[in-house]
Image (cartoon, rainbow, N blue to C red; front, side, top):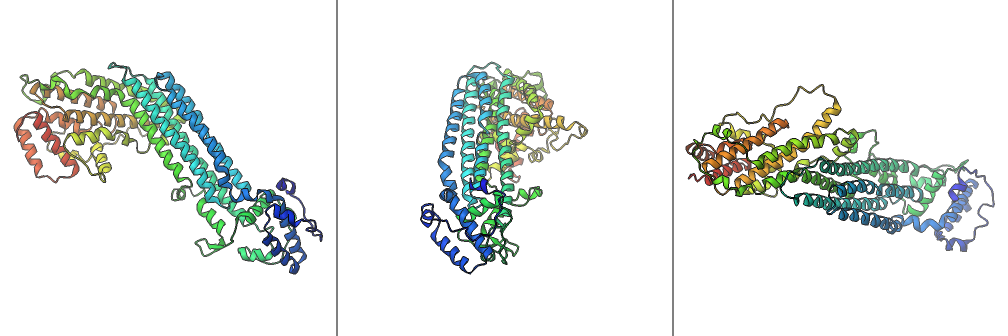
Length: 581
């Protein structure tokens, strides 16, 4: 109220400005006696202008004194009401996630819609908290308020991440338990991608909010340097100059609240070198450090530590949870069809084949692998409608970093099934090398290159395509790549688990592997089919002497992690084919 009534008010010198102040009332309103006494001493030896400034300052402090305790402990005072709001929203999020259990596609669609409403709920509250911080603290004690907002947003993102995990479990469990038939529904994929869009919107909102907070902190730092109500002695101490006191013609609300915040929160007042040899008040230097360079210098913003590190970390967890959700929906059917193939009796069949690789092309692929291939082809049609929506695609692309990590598990199990292991320190890098496949091709240089993909080739014929169409294709290919990698890793792992491989069974396996390679070739996704698929298809029908010679030659090679996996896979194929080495 004092700020509104004093905005643009004109102040004139007079000799009765402070005569009506009740000092007992000052104590009751928490106006510090030391401040008043020091001001009185200064006034006795000061000019009339200084006396008037002291009177104006004292008057404002008296009127605003009931708010002083709240100003000094703003972050702590807001913790409970903000926490209550967060608890209410968290309860709604949990109810939505638990309510989707057993509800099928309709329940998933409803959950996606409700999560879309709940996900951005905390950002208006965080913005309101920053507004109160500007009004009451004017930039002072900024770390406490930023930490409080960071915790608020981080807890909300964590609740969403947990809920997405629950939703994923409910959706995939309900579908995997429906039997072995082809129950693929494109709407499941669309709903899962809507969940990914929600995570992207959350990340974008957090980034926009952080940019706005940085701008506000820069403005607050500049406002702190306004010395309209400082008496000459204080100006000299604060480093804003000294000189003769001047009474301003008017004061706006920003100047008034900055002055009140300084008197309440800025103690002790110290000057700090800002790194350029110039000294400013410590709160100004702190705000400028937090705000970083101007938003016009966009490249420099990436070098700044985040204002809300916990919220950013929890947003990454939310993104990974949503990525896993989409992956589980897209990969559930291939996983179900590949899960039990190691125990198929067909692998033990001997037959009377010649053992030549070409014979395997006369054998039809088995139902399990054709169902996987049909699913991969149908997945293209399921992804395209979402990717064709420019706005939805832009939000989803916000959280596509590190997407390949969701396909790590089948490859970890393949490495274990081959009899290898990676150290925890190197596992991430080695799995990426193995999944990428480019580093593996050099181990197959003595093979015929027929059927091995040219992993380094670039598609230059689409340079003139519409940018939106290229973005749509890129997004679809990212998910086809991830699901294709998971299918490849699982198929290789299941192959390593086959207990015995007869001659006819080996031909069936080669046929199956070649079929899925043809599917991947038809999809046209870079890096597919993976070179290990073609190599294992060759190994299972390779004549015994050639396989023995290959394994012996491999012994003399430099045994890097990738080479060791290939060597162990060769040994495993020889073992299940009952070939002695």
